[in-house]
Image (tube, rainbow, N blue to C red; front, side):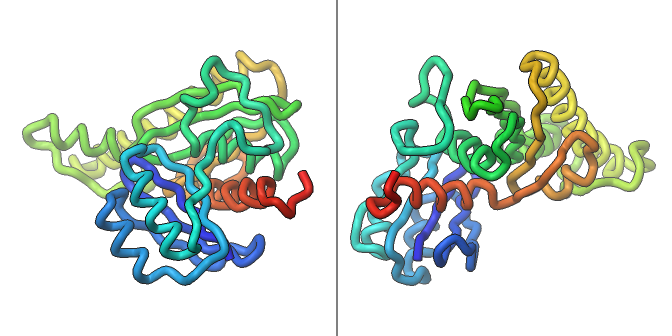
Length: 247
């Protein structure tokens, strides 16, 4: 039994694996009190592996790991064994979730890749056909855009994020929903187009993250969707780096 933890800026997603099978997931707010509260509900496991973009939560995550497994958590770093090479100027500064996604996607598809992660920030990451992670882009996520529009205007309401039936909204709410959603899809497709012109090798486009299924249906440039790519990548990283892996 393995507990995988993906700590994002807004939400933390946990996955419970039995072998390679993802049995259950939890989604909580990314905060120390939320993690400690959930820890009381988690089963005993053999190990814990973490991808985190919030350094201040590291002590809490080690505490959780010792509580459920009796040992400290494994944190993602470029030093772990994986099927890709991180070819950027400062590998230790790359978001752990981006490395996990790149490793998981390349292990599964073994080809050139553009991986779009739709979280608090939207990232597009590039892996070459030889398995080299060469960087990507970081943009504000759709949630940030939606909140900023509401907070920085006097009359515009905050709306739920979903795909409208039409681009031309017939009310203020419909217009905001259309502008935010289709503007976001346009942002992603524009970035994918520019990246493809630069890299000059065929690249499969993979979407992951909370809104990946919805955006995947709206964009013709996304080839495959795996909302749990990061959790699956964490499970594979733990497997590749366990003493019994033989690697």
